[in-house]
Each structure stands twice: as C-alpha cells, then as structure tokens.
Length: 527
Image (cartoon, rainbow, N blue to C red; front, side, top):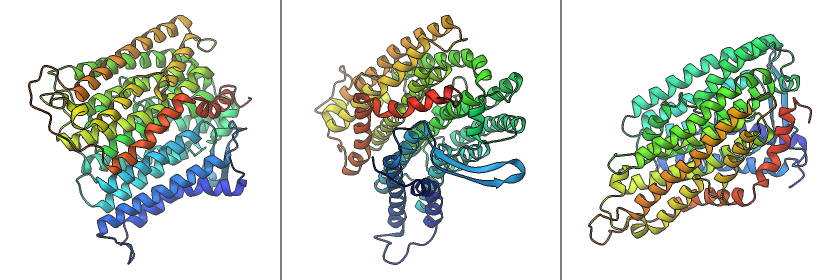
C-alpha cells in the first residue's frame, strides 16, 4: 500500500463520483478536431473507454491509499452541509464494506465500455449509449460511497432511468415490456423505501448514516424500527431481488443487451443487499431481529426456487433460454446473500459481502459469455446450442468452451474459486445465528441452502454438458468451426477469471477488509 494524504484521498473519492457525470455530458458534445478517429461513433466509444478507465485508475489509487490497518474507519471522507432545513449533508466516505464494491463497480464498467467499443449493441446513437452508461456508473458508485440517507436514496434512484433506456432501446425481443416491468417494480419499491428513510430521519433528527449507526437504534422506538425495516426492506428486496419480488429480473436480463445484463447482475443487484447491511442492520437492529427469521425464510425459498427454475430451463426440450437461466441463478445466489444477512452474525454478514463480490465477478463473466454465444449462434436457446452441433463448443470454439466451463464451476461454488466462500460462510452463519433468533428455524434454512447448492451444481453441470459437449445422440457431420475468443473478448473476460481465482485462493484479501467493519457495524459502532 502507499501513503496518500487524507486531502488527496478525499479528492480521489469526489473525483470518482463526479467524473462519470462530467464524462456523460462530454459524450453528448461533438468530438474535438483530431480526436474523431475513423468516425464520430468510434470517437464517442473511445471516450467511454477513456473515462471509465480513468475512474478505474482512480479507484485503484484509492484502494492503494486506503489504510488497511483500520478498515472499520470511514476514510476519504467529505462532510459539508447541503440542505440545512432538513439537516441533509453531502457526506461521503468508504470503509472495508464499501471499498470492494466500489472497486468492482469501476472495473465492470470499464470492461463493459471496452467490450462495447468492439461490439456495440444494435440501437440508436452511440453517443446516447455512452452517456447513459456513464450516468448509470455515477449512480452505482455514489450508492456505495454516500453516508446520508437521502443522498443514498437519490443515488439508488439515479440508476433507474439509464438502465430503463439501455434495455428499452438497445435490448432484444420483448425489450419494451421488460423495461417497463423493471422500472415499475423498482419505482414502486423505492416509493415505499423513501417513506421508511423519512421515518428514520424525522424521528431521529438526522439523516446521517454514521451517526445513526453509532446510535444503534437507541433513539428509535421498536414500532418505528419495525415500520422502517418493513418499508425500506421492501424497496431493497425488489432491487436484490428477493423471492417473490424477483419476477422483473428474468425478463430484464433476457431482453437487455450483453453489457446491460453484466451491469444489472454485477452491480445493480448489489445495491439492494448493500442497503440491508449499511442501513438496516446498524440503524434498526431491533426491527431487523424481529424480521430476520422471515428474511431467512424468503432467502431459503429463493435459493431452491431459483435452482429448480434453472433445472427446468436446462432440461432438453423445454426451449430454455440460457440468459434467462443465468438470471434465475441470480435469484438463488442472492438468496445466500440474504440468508447471511438474516443471521445477523459477523460470519453470516461477511459471507454475504463475500458472496456479493463473487456473484458480481462470476455472473458478470457468465453474461459476457452468453452474449458471445448469442452473437455466434444467433440465439441463446439451449436446445439449439446443444442440438445437432457435433462436439458443440469444445469441438467448435474450445477456448470459449473452456471459459464457459470455468464460469459454471465457479458459479456452483467449487472450492478454490470465489463462489465457494460466501455461500459456505452464509451457511455457517445460519448454523449459529445471532442471540435471540430461532436456531431451529435457521438450521432448517441452512439445510435448505445446502440442498440448493446441490441443485445449483446439478443445473450448471447440465448446462456445461449440453452446451460444451453437445447432444451425444445427435447425428451430425464434423462440427463446423465457430469464431473462438476474439482479442477484445479475452481482454474483457480475463480480469474476471483472474479475480475469481484470486478471491477463491486468497479469501483474506476480502475478509480482511470486511470483517473489522462488520464487527464494528454489528456492535453499534463500538468495535
């Protein structure tokens, strides 16, 4: 790590949040003379890569300057008054919980911009595409860095419009219906969430998340906490998405362009679970303890439901869409995250945060790969991909098949890869939940979660067998070659592969950051 002064750290965080908005505005302007390249379209796509690359470099510098000896302390903080009448402040900062999410967000946006430079989805103006991508990045980065409840809500809502247009204008079949379903579900959930945030702020006299976490719910009555958890939890659960509020997700993923699916799974879903950890656990602990068994139950159902839905889609003859299957797998994986949070233990919450990062890396990679398959075959239909295709991917595009097999075994939680640790820690947390929670109930959830891991392995191995090896009974001639991994695909996917292996082999790289912050958070700011 390197020694960076607090003022420079403060500037870096402010720059990371402001640069995407400035870049979005600049993307809509004519390219300066000499920078147009072969065409204005190429210039604006290069602009997107440059801006997201600079933001990623700033996020890496922020990570290097972060004091890893005190990850429970908020660093790079800015705290200035904004709306005095409501006591709303522009309060920014990062700790061991938010830093990994901030860094992963910056990485995924850069990789998506790089991928889009070579493989722009069909749709209207590239200028609008790049501008929307950068506005989306601004909202997601801000969500993980703001420390005021109303600023959190504004950042949380900021992502809806750009994601709506990315799906509705650059998506595939049924994109309009999927985009409307996405925005209606999330907007309705957000309206309820806002009521809960106002309830906390007006009853406690402040919207400052650090002050509220330190108070640990002592200034809020139990009834107020219950109402706040119910209202805020609904809004966060829609974005997560938690069963049964998940039905917008498969449609949105199926219709979205490749980079839209990567960002939706890799970043936007994390905003919901981050809200549970950052807001509900420390600010309304009494209300969370009352609702935790119900949250655990919904999480356990979601784990099995998502896996069974994937198994049904993977079966031969069901005309299952591979993008839709990966979307349903997210319902199951985010169920483990919610189960870890519901345990209200350091082990469970650390597992949830680890599973968040693992899911972002692995499922982001899976959606990149499915997008590449759809480009080559013209469809993501599993029966078509596994039909009379000879040796399928292993025989037609072996490197692409190897990447898909790697992502699948990482997603099923193979030990030594990132997907293993988060789910294991979430189950360990359920084995011994926080004091006051029903242990028999959580042992039941743990057993259901264990069954979910077996079902997950089942459907992902079926996908690998069918897509990579083909149908063994199919009668076909020697397989026709497909274009294997292109240079830009290799550049966009390799970092995700490397980080998935690194986090799996060296889990302390994440847990060393999150654990002290989680211990402090669950102790009411008194580590």
